[in-house]
Length: 332
Image 1 (tube, helix red, strand yellow):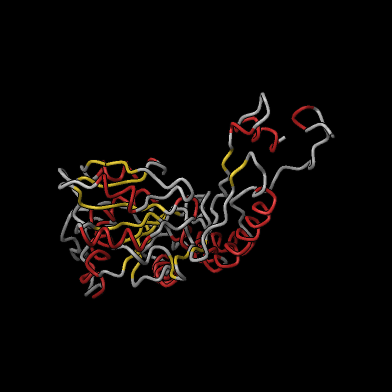
Image 2 (tube, rainbow, N blue to C red):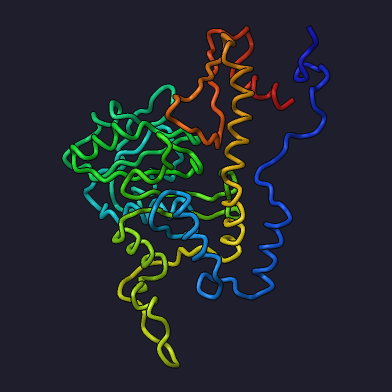
């Protein structure tokens, strides 16, 4: 047998694997056009508001608010639902720390629920034991682009009068029974960081919802508490007019980010299909290996494959091998 590259053998490729993200000429030009125009702010240009409309439609929601990051999106989503001190919010054991830190930022307590061994998402069975009289909401993370089993979770939330937040940071283009993730719960939070399925030039986020009151809270809070109705009336006469009815922060997405995001959104379906094709190749290669567990998603799930998960069975490996050495061998 030929020696592996990690052991001095000839590598199967001599160039690095392609990186992500990758920006094409049109996206680079769009960013340059915004800079050249000088209309780089949400209020001076039109890309931010157009991106909100287009992303809401793609996510199966009535409304979207473009934001500076996915973590901010989670914070606003929870705050819009009234989560605060004394409340508990159930979060998955397997997720990015931002899911839990958003709960803490609201003054509430994150309560960790275990995840399913196969999907790495929470289920009704893992969430129910974590519910207490203080539980206010549940955050469901569609980890790596694999939709959680939402129907039982929605029923559980209804039974206990809980709000359900979908954390879709890694799940752009994923579907559950043909419906886009993010359109099931009360509100959804999205990330457009550089490693996501689509990116708004490195950082960015959004909330989507079909509830007018939740949209209005997030829309106003993200721009220092501006009253949306007053803003929509437009400027009357000359001089400054007071627009603020409440306190908030500055969490707006920039025009450069939104311009790039609009073009990436236009390619989302194409890119998800390519990720699914790549995953099918890996599944064919791995599913029969005794030392690896790699599973097809169920038929009612359309996995976005922001990441591909394969699980090593340590007891099946040869002496001296573990997960980290396998990764090193692949990279070599």
